Structure formats: C-alpha cells, structure tokens
Image 1 (cartoon, rainbow, N blue to C red):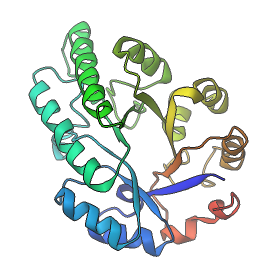
Image 2 (image 1 turned 135 degrees about the horizontal axis):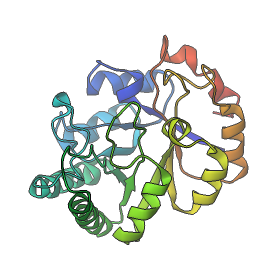
Image 3 (image 1 turned 45 degrees about the vertical axis):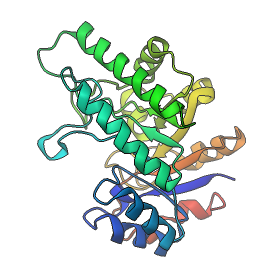
Image 4 (image 1 turned 120 degrees about the vertical axis):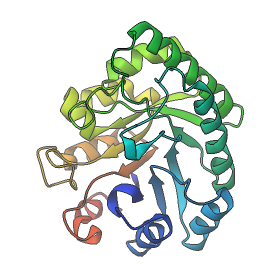
Length: 259
C-alpha cells in the first residue's frame, strides 16, 4: 500500500509551522514533509511533531534568501561556507526529529557565470553534503525542478540528475521525482519512473496546469498511483500542491488508493 505525506508548506500556506502541523494531523495525516523547519529550534520541531503524532519524511537544506528569490545555494559560487553550515544545521534537525532523507535544492544558475565553474561548485558541495549526511545514514536527495515555474533552475530534468549524479559519485545520493515538474519538462512519466526506480527515494505529486490536487488537470494520477503500487514503490508520496479549497475536500483520490 502506498504511503502519503502532507507537504505542509504547500497544503497549508501562511499558517506557520506549528499551526500547519496541527492542521495536517487534523486532516488525518500521520507524516509530513516541508520546505524548512528552521523557524524553531531542533528540539521544538521534534516536540511539535510528537505532540501531533506526526513523523517527518524530509525537508530541504537551507535555501538562502527565499524572500529575495533564492531557491537554493548549492550551485552558487562564493557561498560554499554558508552551504556547509547549512548542512550542519539541517543535520541538527534531522537528528532531533529522526529524519532519514534531506533534499538539496540546486538553486538558480547565476547570471553571467561560467557553466564549468558552477558545475564544479555544485559537484563539490553535493559531495560534501553526501559525506556529512552519509556518516549518519541519511539520504541526500536531488530534485529536478521545472524551468517554467523557476526560470534558470540548475537541475531541471532527469538527464541533469543522471549526469551530475555520475560526477558526484555518492552512494547515498538519490533522486526526488516530482511528477508535476517532470510532466512540464519531459513527460513520459511512468517509463522514466520505471527506468530510474532504483535511485528514486521519494516522489511528489501535483496536477498540471495549476499545481493543484490530483484530478484537477491533465495528469492521470489514478493510473500513476496504481502503477507505483504495482511496481512495489516503498517510499513516500508527498502531496505538494496548492489546494483549490479545503485540503480535506481534495483528498478523495487517496481513498481510491487505500489511504
């Protein structure tokens, strides 16, 4: 049976960390993922999860100045010290909350930069993160993100992932496969999932267009989720979409898949 977790950043925007965790528990979820837990201390984060009976599947490394448009610093030359500190900070939260996988947002290619130099910085940062996380048995994830929503996204396709993963060469590096992003960038969703299944540790879902709940757009999620179950996918399915109304009203697709 597939396991579904609530991306509280997407499903409950504007609520803040504590209220969004409370809302996820009230909507029946027993696990969550989120963009960032860093608004509270690691101990407070773990206590909030415990208070609501929630596990945390994953979160991101610190992403830089999000309000200023930064979407990760992994590919940014000159920010290597900040990146290393961010990995150490994320580890504190993972230890406290028992999180076993952390996503490294690649970021946006810096305008005017030398592509070869950017790649060297990215690969070195990812190797460092993989080593630091791997020492504690934690998976490092890399997620391709579509360039329509995020112009200039450094990692945007599974081809990008495969090429860079080969250079990084880390045994604990895995692919985070978001069906929404991949529908926009490349399509052929299930064939690609099947081919890359050995390196996929987590999937996320949202429909297209609009990035709303499954069933609101063109992606046949009844087929996709049934295929994941048939393939024996054992990871979590993260619900990372913008609900059109109340979250609970858009969860009918979960009942059709045994959740």
